[in-house]
Image (cartoon, rainbow, N blue to C red; front, side, top):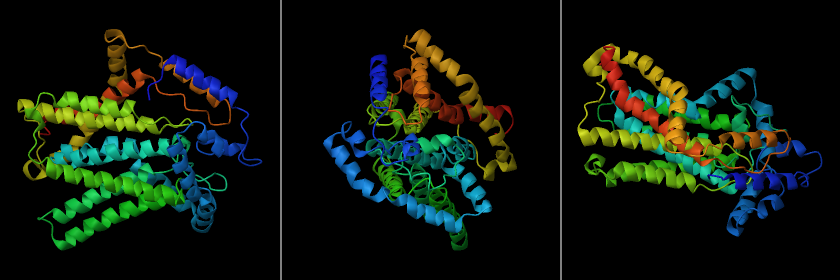
Length: 406
């Protein structure tokens, strides 16, 4: 996914050479502002035979999805439902997970966060990989009206739905944990299971209601989430006796694996921001593994106590914890990380060139060809997001002790 200046320039030239590409239909130029809506020839000459044929097969499920979704919107839309589904869609966004994933750690349930990070991290990566591989469009707007908190999400490809992948993986995990919890009575199990079902249906149906995804997107997203859940549960069983702290090479392997899958991510045809979330979540996975290895290796006592042993004070921890995470992510990290990469490690900083080319392409209504992501941006973003679990797991327990929150 990393791109040299020469490759970027060649891509820009390719964009300029194709500005006058034929329209899919008369009057449809507005559709080409979104990725995936160009004629088949646009993709055929930029894809392998297998990749293009699989895309052609799947377009039969996306070509007419907009009319179906429009009829649903026309029948069921109300101002109150617009507000509800618009804002509940935030529960599937990566910002929501940055804030909520640390909570179980701070309340003494590290294993819950660990399972969720693995499932979400690889759900995001796999769904993003398939999105960029197939380059399938979202439901066309118009006729569909898209209801979204962020306009950037409308600039992604459609299938699979990462929201649906996340919701499926997380819901299956909580179903599993609720059913396996021996301390819960059956009425309590049914209550918690009902909450999980309500969360799942809200998030998944909301993608249809908001005009963001069609049926293929949802089913493929659900499959991705289910696969990632199954692999996590299976690997947890297979490696139940594995302790990363016993192996000095583990953090090196973790970082190498994360960067390997990021630098070997498929290259999309049209400009699409999906890859940014993949880098962020794989960085979180790497930071989690490094922090856990460090605790095991050196026997650090950084486990947060639970409510049963420390009382109501534990519910004040998020005030300190969230502030610490935001301080790292939004204040400290970028300056520190990019200074390290540029000044000490001598990485070439071509982010400005890429941003300039991206802005130049955005002057045209037509979605541009994919430009690429500078190597320094991939590594920098990986380190920044790896710092979040390090802050949550290694530093926050110390801060809780200093503030008498145990």
